[in-house]
Image 1 (cartoon, rainbow, N blue to C red):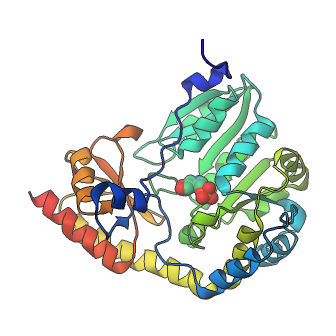
Image 2 (image 1 turned 180 degrees about the vertical axis):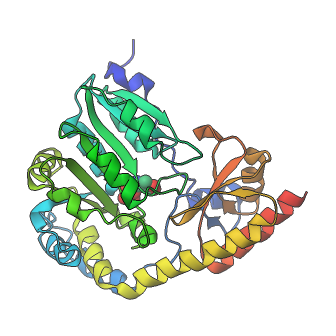
Amino acid sequence: MGIKYKRTLDKTTPYKPGKPIEEVKRELGIKEVIKLASNENPIKPSEKVINAVMKAAENINRYPDGGCFYLREALSKELSVPGENIIFGNGSDEIIIFAIRTFVSPGDEVIISDPTFLIYRIASEIENAVIKVVPSKDLEYDLEAMLDKVTPRTKMIFIANPENPTGSYISDVKLRDFIEKLSDEIIIFLDEAYYEFAKGGDYPETLDLIEREDRNVIISRTFSKAYGLAGIRIGYALARKDIAEVLNKIREPFNINSIAQAAAIAALKDNEYLEKSVELVKQEKKKIYNELNSLGVRLFPSRTNFILMDTGRDSVKIAGDLLKQGIIVREMSGWGFKGYIRVNIGLQEENDKFIEMFRRMIKN
Ligand SMILES: Cc1ncc(COP(=O)(O)O)c(C=O)c1O
């Protein structure tokens, strides 16, 4: 009975994104909705990006450049990394998925932390991998425990640095020490989706790792966060040439549409937008910590554009009540964190409204 599909899909639950703004407007019949649930950039794209998008739209009767020539050139210059070491994806999500498809065969082991970005597990399950889950320690990576899980069947290890949903990060010294202890049999996937917010201090600069012959490192980054292009879907990975070549075999030939390519080129040139985005997060994050810490809510340190908080109360109710006020946050009990919510940094006035509503709910 019914359609026959890959049995491995039985254990897979589809990724559940944050509620879209339009959906909440429709459902609640309200006009003003603030979304703080998907770690997006709240700042509208700059005119430079919009103009590039409009111009690219004039030629959408043609297929895009499958090799992303001009974008590759621009990014290569920006990062000082040869173009042959860059792989583009329809969001960095897609790169995670095709990296797993490329390297993981049924029965191979994939090591992930818990909690972590959900796509690692979903994509590994689809390939029928054996997933070894390592609980975090005080919501930080337990790298020792991850090393203990390594076996001759370990194929990939996922490290989101910084991590989603915790916001925590691994320092340069700790990350390099961990990588030294692994072997050249393993693919080390470093997901740096929040790189632009995290960089500085002891946060690792990792690009040298892709030059190593004795380690297999893939670094992914995205235009969805600090560059503000989540809706257009574009991310990239950096890896040694032989790794990039094999990933390109799996990549769908026209995975980056021409409008996304043009938008990313314009975004790379738009330093003003990037700086504004990073600064907004820095300032507003400080404010949210200050305002909410005094309420007795536990806020976890974050190197990203979001904050995980233990409300110490019924988070389903809190998230539901906030939603009724037109504020969408991410309720975390589905990730095993009862009482927790994750809130990303919005515009100044959006954060103020969240703080005000949240304060009322906590005090009640
Ligand atoms: C850790 C992490 N990696 C990857 C992504 C995916 O980003 P995108 O597919 O938009 O590049 C996200 C998005 O929230 C994330 O939190």
